[in-house]
Image (cartoon, rainbow, N blue to C red; front, side, top):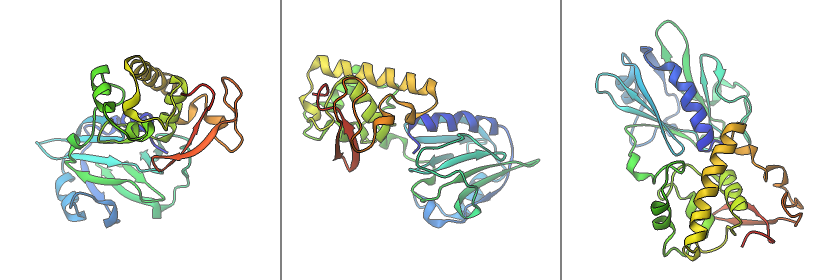
Length: 261
């Protein structure tokens, strides 16, 4: 499932499309067009322009266009794959399929001289939007400051994991990254977010940054030390305790009852 690390890989891949004139756009799935956008509006906004800048905020990929045109926002949901010129940006996306079924092509941008940028999404949980409201998202998890994280958690009775996965509070963390971060930090995902003391918030931020750095180097959100133990009866790689399996924030959650407090 694409989390911020996967979207960063997509961003780097999409950078190779900068400066290439757009000659056609396919947007056959009206459901996939968000924010009141329709196929005619997308075609009118993009054809004849080029992408001039690639950005990412959390799990949102942003491509700015030339001639003061709109920003194209791409969301990938749980199964979205970015393909450029026939090559998938990620070889094996966890919990998705890399079968190139034309029925899964939700959005395609064709370039002058050949080649295309395609978004395939078997489950249709992503979306395409022109000029998405970027301020609806919290600060990117890779950039969040200690002061910002303290404010995000303060006075909240929500489970810690749910608070961290609230994209309006902090952008980019999904199920795998959040579980890995909290496991490394030794924090119980079910704890009230506002219950963390000053030292625990600092430890959480340190763990978040190191988790993103290490898993980014390894190749994605599914490369955590906890990943192979994410099954019923799985044990903690640190102390051997049988992991707790719970639903927190609507997501299946694994944590260690021994060292996560």
